[in-house]
Image (cartoon, rainbow, N blue to C red; front, side):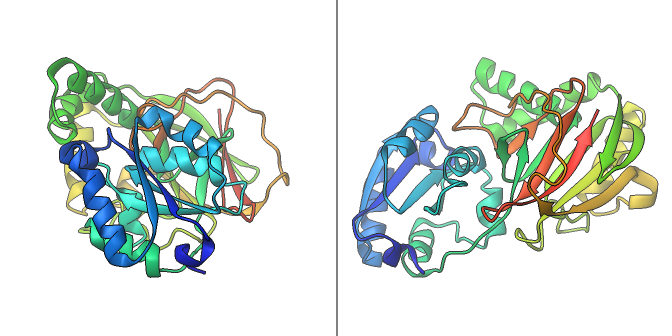
Length: 314
């Protein structure tokens, strides 16, 4: 069933005006979108709103389908509102990196993305859930959340674009690098790790050169878990460079690398801990969650059909 057939009324289109691409386009993004929808023959009502207003806007809408324009954080906020419903989520890649849209094969140009909404078919995909909070891409402890916090500080203080702010932020995070002693329990089997970065992905992430950060599928009901081997700052920098060119190896660079298959929700309930989204506001960020670790943090993966895999971190 297409978005066109799902709705017997104009398609509501909510655009995060603060998203990378939308912010760069400015006010003309609304006219551009209206023209793209008209060309595709799809009636739509386009609304530009602040990122923090995505959830309230979705609460007031009762349409069977809604299109969201923004980055991964915006889409994650929308997914958290729609996952327990039968409503379809249309994606317009108007953020900075648009990782989730790229993985789904959605065109990065507006006319192409709108044509997918008009002509494409609905499909189910997985999301990750950390103690009830949705993530589309990954959740992590350690270096990456530190980098994101530093990047946002650079953006706030200096008004830098995200990609420019990444450079001084990476240096700051590297200077502050620390190791975390964690106990990771996967389906009842526990392992202790000491790591500067624990990474949990929604489905399996590739480490191959030219495909770093890509996933072959978003619907296999898996969590992938990577615990980087404990190392010095220089070694961590060298690891990062080798990872970028696809020369990192599971044997030499990771204390733990595995996947967790899905199972039905409620099969093994976890004790809730806390989660803090340090990657941005409800409508911002990049679709990743950073974890604040108390006694136990439980991560689950699943789809709207409710299969869940589970990882516990203590």
